[in-house]
Image (cartoon, rainbow over the protein chains, first blue to last red):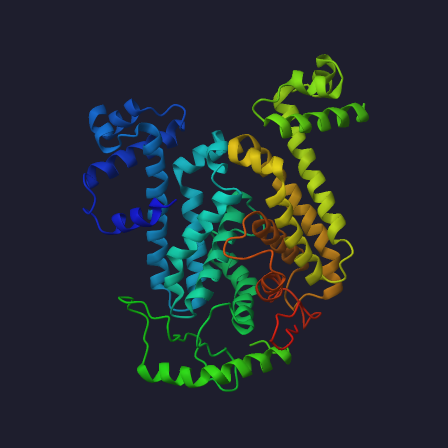
Length: 275
Length: 203
């Protein structure tokens, strides 16, 4: 899983890795083989033939052989998924759209992934071995780490990491154990889930105060300026991210507010107020 | 017959605890249970595969029975979920046999667990329903839908804590009350564990 972020960078910036186009070709060939007959029947020879390269070439790119290739396939497919999610999240106009779009995108890609579908059906132990307990933890942290910056327009980084971790759990739960009443590839059903369960949770987490959060003005606090649905938080700006607009005066206003915030947080909580 | 089945299951579990899944054979189970191999095959006609699946199902059931015993005294929805998540998380972390099997041969365990997971989830959802009724759900929330969603989330968090410290009652309270229940329940709930130095977290 550690290679995921590196691979994600490589996938987004082509040509940075040595042999990059050939590497991708071998990986795509492997995916085609997996979709047809799974891991047990996919040999280096099959992969080489499918990729239209020699065995020697495959071993040159992947000296570790089949195991290394399979690992690289997982990392690459994860990176591709995150990349597509990033595009979807970046396009979103508000937080609801980001959550719904992200969950639908991830759920749809998982459902439609041919190699994954074959393995789930015929070799479940290959897939599930990476989805339980500690491995699941790593997956949750990696996925949320990658997607959290895209929510920076609407919440602080620590909040964003919690929210994207939650969204990842939701996607995984319904992907592993589908429900006939809740189809997360369907935008309107997903919107129902997001507005009913997720958005109130986000507001409530925000009001309760996420640990390590700095300089936050809670939604609906009497000291906060009137609240547009989307607001940027001081400290949430990420360099190069086009959608974060942090006006200098907003930062100093928030700093002024930070002491008042502690008090108003406490007041809001003791009144049981929820935004 | 029921006693024999139980005896074989417990014996098999003892073998797995000692040697792991891969090294536990029908012969080992029979010897440990003090029955014949024939008896084991009669009780589990599917052979070793069926025996292993049955042991996993049984161990899982035992886990949830104990979990139920830990939480059944809870007086509110918040309390039952907080206790449930904390206890389940701790139990999983400290479960030697589970941890060893997960580290050495997870591929044997997980297909069965996943097969069981629908039943487990339904069991948790059913358990939560009376607490949801007692607490009252927010207007427009379908109680069964909420129960299913909460059951999914409880399973997710207890098996993989992610960024949350599930040994910390304050964080667990925040997870349950702020994140998971905010959209589900109507109105403020009982007082939660108080972090030192902060005003009470009501609702």
